[in-house]
Image (cartoon, rainbow, N blue to C red; front, side, top):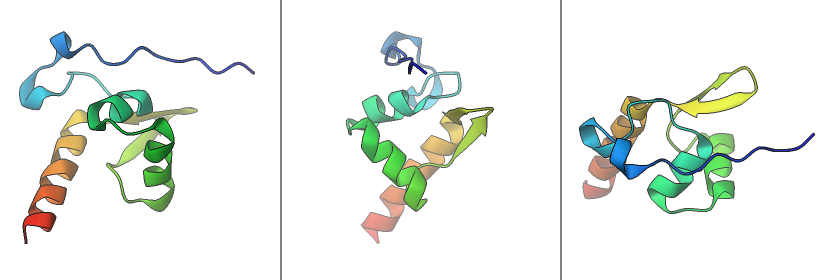
Amino acid sequence: MRATTHPPADPRTTLRSGLPDRYLTPEDIAVLFRVPLETVYQWRKKRSGPPGFRIGKHLRYDPTAVHDWVTHQSSATAA
């Protein structure tokens, strides 16, 4: 089975909060946070990153949930 890769999110297609108005892929999350793709999968495994969900075999992230996760991370480190 051959893995397919998706191009990174086009920053020109972003809407509110600077996030795309579509569900994000793990590749999008890696580009967004400038981390290796493996880090995104480790976050998922450890349940320490933004919450994701599966559509069949595909992992996706809701942009609103990603924004909420970032907000929570920011407030947790500020405390």
